[in-house]
Length: 103
Image (cartoon, rainbow, N blue to C red; front, top):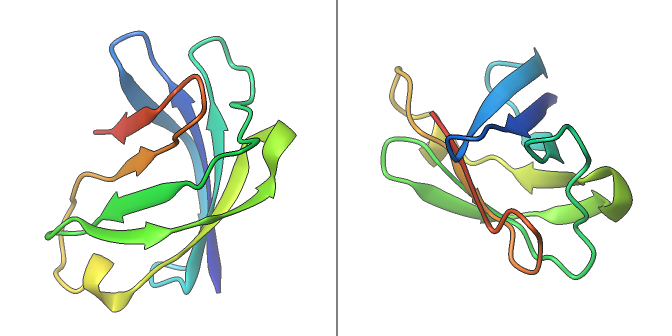
C-alpha cells in the first residue's frame, strides 16, 4: 500500500503538506514536490533521499516523473515504529530545492 503526498515549499524554507492520501503504515510514499510558486520541482538528474521517523531513518527514492516532480520512497518500519509526529525532510540534489524540509 502507498501513501500519496503533495508538498509545496513556502517562503520560510519549509514545505507545507497540500494533501495526503493512503495507508497509515505504507510500504512506500509517492511524493510530489512543488516550489514556492506552485511549480513542479524538476527532478531530472536527482537521486532523492527521504529522512523520516524518530531516528531520521533514510530511504533513497526513485524518480517516477522528473518533470512533474514525483518520486517514490520505500517506507521502513523504522520510520513509524513509535507513535507520534516526527519531522520529515528530503534531499533533492541537482534541483532548485536541494533541502526540502517539512514541519
